Length: 419
Image (cartoon, rainbow, N blue to C red; front, side, top):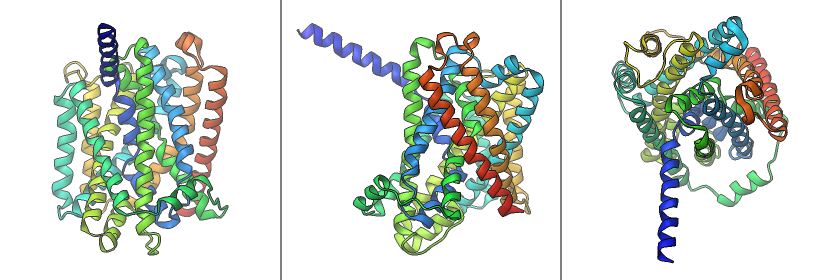
């Protein structure tokens, strides 16, 4: 009997070790979606609507998990990144058009991430001419001088700093019964501002660069088909963590700022507004969370871009590669960081216009990526027996159709409000 128990314990421990060894790409990709723009969106939602949009996070969790699972599955089964598959299956014209949008969108978002780093550090009295160059060097050094395992562990570690938002939300002492009531029985309004916030929440959580990074990271890590059930757990854990953090951001601003009638338009303004209402500690926790969100995305965005471009043109890619082995991959990575950080150091950089532009370009790219993804994941010549089931296709196409509809609505409203 004791021998049997020992065998069971050994088997359980081995399974746990396998899960730990596979977890990473989905967890990192999901958390990177909570970047500076995401933190700003959730802060604005909480300040303006209180708990009125918390119910939408359940839908976002489901949509994110569906999309991320397909990306991860394609990477595990084919052993190829998204850029590779697009080039092989759709030809050079579609690849060039997709990559042009992808690069431009990622660059504008990366600039916003370095703006988030600068803004969060200025809350602690550190000028952007110090914080941005140091952050850019760290982002470059960790990837260029490290290997995949080291980089992945580092990104997982800083992903856990998002828990500062959980502490901030709990410290706000929300009325939990009222929170639960508004989630279970939402009061949905059909006015323009409410719908715009809902659309923006969805749009800021599911972005093209997450899909590129996730699939490429799965390939770079070398996850095998027989390990896929653990990779799926990684994706679902990342999706849950993403929305879990978003929940507490909305919770803290909804509890403290909304009743006071404080309206914010960015994450750093939310951190500043929390100070007189909740004290220095809560404000600093929020600022640390913004710094961490921007810092993590500043890693993932250049990596996703370098992966995508290298795959699209058939060049060597991989974090374990040296400059001699993969000059284009590491060259793209370096160039992106230099440009993204450099724009922030310009005295008159139009950051607001850049953020609107990034939202517009991402909105144009997301439907393209989602439709291509669904065509690829249903191609038996690529996926074999791992194509979507009929039930999965119904779920996936419905999810994608809703996301495309919301994206079009977001593009239209962004254009109307901007011009």
